[in-house]
Length: 523
Image (cartoon, rainbow, N blue to C red; front, side, top):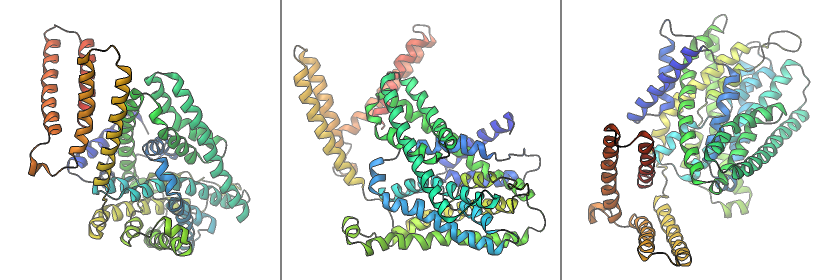
């Protein structure tokens, strides 16, 4: 892909994302539809998907950023249902879709059919998580969707390796496949844990926020590439390293945390816009790759799509309730949810760009030099499953969530827990102030004491009655007036710079202080 078409693609994708957010539409779906529409315009550049770009350049930072923002504690607490989705469901979907494709696609051997199935098995939860967050899904459901999306690619890519090996003729047996799967997964986990610990210790000793953030930018690419070089799971290496670093982020400096958050939010926006737009733009290349009459393949595509969708539904409900029926310990520790919860989870099976990249990464020839059987059909079917599930689930998931009434009810409990925590924090801060303020002017200690008490009181005020009954709370009034003051301060600073009374260095330093204060007020 040449430089100028690539820049045009990124800028166009960001423009579509901006419009989607303004209209409160799911950006991933809007980008796919826009890509499909643009691909039909004559003269549009050929945006050929490069699997190495996706698997080595796009997937690692997206996984790393998502894992950094995830709770290692919550994922560990929900490891059983996450494993059932990320491992069990992927393998179940691989078996179901593989058999259907083997039966319906003429001339497709079982190994190639299973390769197709492994490609389309893992959902990409970016769109589902975006919709769920906007509609307020319960925290545990968000943890399950995020955890599934972090780990299911590792299962699918490992299954794809096994299926491709069986097809190209490198030797394959069921036991060697299972053993290879375990070794690849375990190796990725161990490598990720080691890298996470080493990088954390290095960052603690750097004491330079810019270098720490720069190192963080390199880690996902290095972890993935090293893991692939060692023939272990690059996905798991990246995810485990990021979970470790995210869990220990409070030990880093404040500047590193603020900088990392801004960097990765911007990176996510660019990468997600790029990949979802790229999905839609693949239509011409995918259709050109299929030789002969495409109509029988469309029938097979409809069957594969239906199988992929139904396999998730068939798996999620038993996986939700059977462990609780078979184990009283599981049932006592984790009571069964109402049926609406697995219903929403089973309808969040949108595929993403990893499906297309994995399909494109399938080798073109076998060890004998013969063409890989059905490769163009596999790419076409993978594209159909990706687009169909994105549009089907993406357009209907908000309606399903609202219709079934699956909403988060943690807001009051969160506010109460935050208030309790802030009360404890304030007591500790005031105690430390008393111990450390010997010889300090009374005016200074009084100011610090009032600031601590204000932060604590502002949190408790959120638990009061609605502002429509009581009027603005004191903390709300304080925030509104302070924001007005900050606006006046900025205008004055710019005016002083423009008239030559201060230089740009002074303006930049002072604005930084004002920006940090406004960030605290608007958190």
